[in-house]
Amino acid sequence: MSMVRIGTGAGFQGDRIAPAVDLAERGELDFLVFECLAERTIALAQQARLADPGAGFDPLLERRMRAVLPACARNGTRIVTNMGAANPRAAAERTRAVVRELGLPLTVAAVTGDDVLPLIGDCILTETGAPARALGERLISANAYIGVAGIVEALDAGADIVICGRASDPALFLAPLVHRFGWAMDDWVRLGRGTLVGHLLECSAQITGGYFADPGVKDVPDLADVGFPLAEVSDDGNAVITKLPGTGGLVSRATCTEQLLYEIHDPARYMQPDVVADFSQVELEEIGIDRVRVTGGTGHPATGELKVSVGYRDGWRGEGQISYAGANCVARGRLAAELVRQRLSDWGSRILEERADLIGLDAVAPGGARGAAEPAEVRLRVAARCADQETAQRVGEEVESLYLCGPAGGGGVSRAHREIIAVASALLPAASVTVRSELSETLDA
Image (cartoon, rainbow, N blue to C red; front, side, top):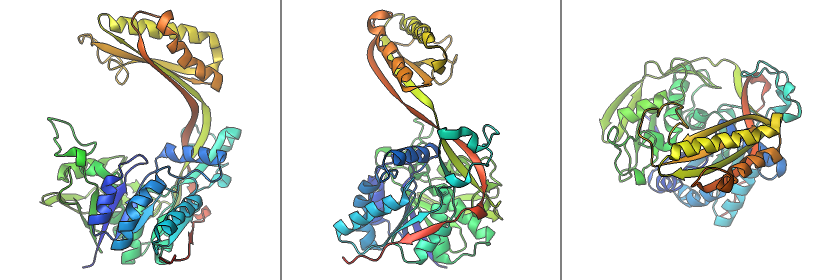
């Protein structure tokens, strides 16, 4: 039975690079996948592209490529990534420049088609029930979660590096399996199992002990040097999840179970562009140290619709923070919050919504700390969504003014303001989306 080794190089935009380099050098991988997009990330990337047509891709793209390409070229490891974000073509060109500079004989492909802004106007936004066109000039982006087609096309054409935008996270891993094993696009069982593998790998260290760790409850060894996961996938779609020997963290039935259930609404109907995956009968078996066998996944025909992330301007956020310490610090923090609220009320309807939290006391769970001993210090954070930039800037200024116009002992003020890019969701018929791959010529080393 043939087998593919596929590893995770990143699980989000700001992920660590060293574990990916380790996988590239020692993993004996067929494929290394960098999953770097979240819902808001793509909208922010579109905002960056509006300001600069050459921007809009992952800011760590070049650094990651420089770090892993020499080892990947040496070991025959191919790369698939969504670091193209809002601008896959520009990301591919930047990667080609790195390839040329390093003198590597690699081909680079860009996958396009996820940008569906011209198609989205009549689509209904799930959150509001209104059509997307009702956002008017506030609408800045619409990116569909595309499936494996463009990536498979690029790999079939010989691409060593495939860069796409808003592909489905598991599709980044499923596509290499479809390419290598030649799975039919109506083989729902294998597509479901490949989606399961992708879902387990997509969050990098989350399945090797990161995020899982809880000292004294779920201890994880050597988390400082946590390794990223890899899967040994058979041609029937079943797999073993593991990591490189000598790296920190752990792969266990518990870590795999947490990742299996992560961001899953209905385990029996995990809707993806290419398949509705069914994880309800999955079995996880520890077969060795840091080795978990995954079986029992299946799938059903896709829905024929694609989820779309719609980005739009939603005002400005202003924020200010200040700390109070020592006796009566909670009362002083609450007084400071009330003073800022009163002063911001002078701006009327230009403040769309606001909140004030004492971090460490009630910021995450309001009222949860009642009756507990008073902490030694608190940090007040005041934030507001505002109609314009000037008002947002005023929020931080009012917090800073608490130095002399507020209660005693405030210190360590910070302030910031930025435009808010909000995200809504819609559905679009998959048949209306055209996905293409664009492959560069092979470069001579």
